[in-house]
Image (cartoon, rainbow, N blue to C red; front, side, top):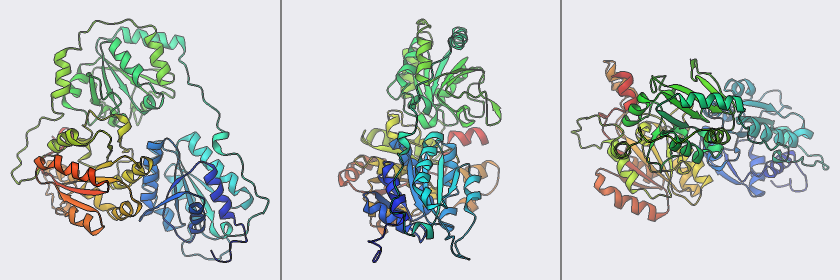
Length: 551
C-alpha cells in the first residue's frame, strides 16, 4: 500500500459502500482482482474470514445468511476464483438465500489476461444474478443495488469489478447513496381473502385426521405457535419440512420431519391422514417423499405464493394465499374445538419413545450403529449447541434429534451436494460466535474440503465435528449393493480423522465406544476450542430412505 495513502481509490469507495450496508463478516479468498478492496474492508472494521477454497467462501456465507437473517457476503478473485463457485451458487438459488459475492474481473485495459473469462454466463446458468460494474462513478450505486436485489429476490447476486478500474484514482467528490435497507419498502403481512378462508374452512371441516406441516415460511412469519394452536383445535398432529425441523420440538404430538427422512411413526400417521395443511412450505418432491408420504390425504397450502404444481407434480389440491401466521389465525377464528380422538396418550408415548427406524442390522466388526450414535448425542450434547447437518447417507440419521429447537439447527440440501458441511459450520460459527457449533458430516463429504480445518483453527471458530466414518461413500455402496453390483469403487478405507485434525493443530479424538461419549463431550466443551471426533460406524446400517427406494 506504500504510495497509495494520499490517493483515494475506487476500491475504497466499494469497501465503504459494503460497510454502509451493515456488513461486518466477509468470507474471502484473495487474488489480484480483489485484494486491495478486501484489505480496505479489513481496515474499515470488517472481519475477513480467509478460507482455503472459493467454494467454501460462498457456502459459508450461505449458512451465515440463514442463521443471521442478513445478506451473506463473500469475495473472490476473477477467472478461476469465480468458476470455483459453481456448486455453491445453485444451492443458494434453490434455497432462496440472499448473497452478495464481490468478484474481480480481468482488467479492461489489458489486451490479454490469463485469468480472463466471460464470467456472466457461468453465474446466470446457476440462476444467480450477475452485474458487471464498468463505470466507476456507478460503483457505489452498483454495490447498493446488488444488496437491494439480494434482499428483495432472496437469491445470490455476483458483482464483477475489473480490478484496473477498482485500483484507479477515485473522483474526490464521490459520495455514497442511501443503503439498500433504506430503499426497501416495509411489506405488510398479506391477510387472506374471506371467501378463500371460508373455502379452506369447509375443506378442513370435511376432514377427519389432519396434520399441520410447517416450513421455513412459517418460521419467517412467526407462525409456529398459531400452527400448534390450530393442531390442538383440530385434534391434529404436527410436522415440519426438513429445513424447519425443530419448530415444534416441545410438542407431544410433533412427528418431526415430513418427507423422505420421516420416522416410522410419522409415516404411519401420514398414511392415516386425510388432510395435510402445509403452512409456508415449498412442497418439494422430497417433502412429500415423491407423493408417497400421504397417499390418502388432500393438501391445503397456506402461503404468500402458493403453487399447485411443483417440480413436475401436482403438489396441492387447494390454496389459501396469505401470510403464514395471518392465514392460520384466520382459520382459528372460524373453527371450533374438536374432541380428541386421534390424539391419545398412547400415540404421544409412541411418538416420544419409538426409534425413528427399527430395522435390525447385524454389526459384527466392532463399529457403531449410527442410529445409536444419534441417540447418544441427543442425550449428551449441551442444549446451547448449534447443530449443522450435512448431506449424504448419514444426514438422514442426524435429522432425528427431536428435542432440539429450530433455532439451533441448520441444514441446506436443495442442490443435493456433499462437501458443504464444514463450510456451513464455519458460517454458523461466525454468526453465533459464543455458541459451540456441532457438525455431523460423513467421511467422504468432510474429506472434500478438509483443508478448512486450518481456517477453523486460524479464525478461532468454535466448531466441533463428528466425522461419521464408514470408510466409503455411504449412499453409493448401499445403492450398488442393492443393485447387485460390487461396491469396491465407492470404498476408500477409513481416514484417521483424529490424526488429520492433529496435523491441522486441532484436537482429534476417536470414539470407539459410546460409553465414552459423555466424558468426551464434557472435555471437548470445556476446552472451548475446535475438535474433530472420528466416529467409526457400520457400513451395514442402511438409511430408511435407501431401504425404501432400493428395498
